Structure formats: C-alpha cells, structure tokens
Length: 301
Image 1 (cartoon, rainbow, N blue to C red):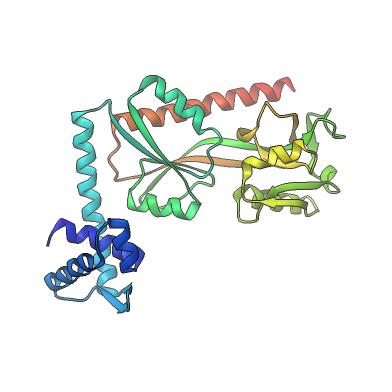
Image 2 (image 1 turned 135 degrees about the vertical axis):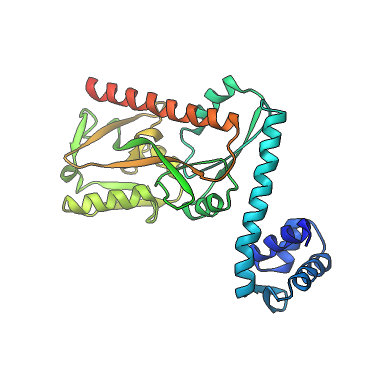
C-alpha cells in the first residue's frame, strides 16, 4: 500500500466523482482510476459502488476512510512539527472564520510580533468549519456559534452584545438604550434565517411579544450598517461589527439578554506550532481588551 494511493482514495471518497477528484489532484482520470483499482486489489475488497463515473463509498470504503484519514492526519502533523522545529519563525497558520469583522485587527497585532508568519484564511459556514475541524485541516477556527465535538477544543473568547443600530435622525438616536417592545412597529434590515444572529434576535423578540418586520433580508452581514445609515430600516448588529465611520447610533437592549458567543476552536490532536500558540494568546488578549472597552463605554453611557 502506497501513500499516493491513500491520498487519491481520500480525494475520491470525499468527492465521490472520478472527474472532479482527478481535477482536484491535477491528474488524469485513467491514472486516478488505476491507482484506486490497485488499492482495492491490495485490500482484497471493493471500496466503492460504481455508477458510470460516479462512485459511492460502500461499507468497506466507509470503514477504511476513517483509518486512512487518521493515518494521513498523523503524517501531516509530523510534517508540521518538523517544519516548526527547523524554521519556527516561518510557516503558515491555517484559519477559518464564520465572520471576519475583527480578524484584520487580530492579524495586525500578531504580525507585529511575527512578520514572517503567513496566514491562509477561509470564510466558511458552520457546517464547512465542522468538516475541516474534524479532519484537522485548520489550526484554529473563530466561530459564532461555538461548536462542540469529542475531538474539538472550544474556548469562549468573547460574549458579544447585539445592539440596535439606528440612523442619526431616528427618533431613538438620542437614547443609550431601548426596550424591545418599543421596536415592535419598526421596519428592520437583517440577514436571512439560518444565521445565528437572525435566529437569536427573532427568538428573543418573540419572547417580548412581537415578530420583527423585515424590509430587507440578505446574506452579507457587513452590508447592514450601510442600509441602516441609508434609513432603509433599523438593525440588530453585534458590537464587534460596529463601524465608527458610519453615521449610525447604537443602543443597548434593555430587559433581555441579547448576546452571541464567539469561540476559538481547534482539533485536540492537531499539532500546534509555537507561532500558532502565540496566535491563540493574541486572540484571547484582543477580545479581553475589547470586553474592557465595551464595559467602559457602557458605564459612560
């Protein structure tokens, strides 16, 4: 059994399509098919049920996939550990995020200490993030909501208050806080159902006795503040997504706890380089400073 066979098998098992797997591996379909066939001959059992160029893992394949992923995972960890020992001030930190609003500030702080460390950042859905975490293919994930799993470490780094954003000329613009019941007749801009913030807001508003009326529902959270500024509607925006350059006033919510949790996640068995460990400290310290700043603003208001 060869390492190349395992790598090809993983690609086909994950995509379940010869053409797409060959394209991702930059090899010909015939070469890929022959390699998988030799692996099956070595193992003495078929790993896939075949329909044309489409394949589906059978029971043999599903069981072997777990072992193959574990074997390649350990080899990759060994490679990363050796790279870290031989060149600790170089390398790449693999990151995944569900929201990147504060990531540039965090990366800027880390770059001051480690200018030669590179980053590869992916913006992912929660499910995509879970997949990469289980495979051990990322160093850290910055996620809201937190993700639980037997092989996942989860550290809550920030409790992010969700604020009410109104344009400067709004009737509530001279207030520092507002009760949810005062908003029942307002029109809102927001993200679509399925986003954590939207689902949380709708649930809390329902407990306050009303359902928010949305004039806009999108899939780009960063666009909401511009819509609020344009007086299209008011919005619920997490404190970490505030944009001080825009002509918007933010109010705290009274009487109801409207907070999202931001978590730092990593695979329990993935090798974490010294640079990655220091990156984790930068993340924790950054959000600690953010929490102190928000508490200070809250007292002043």
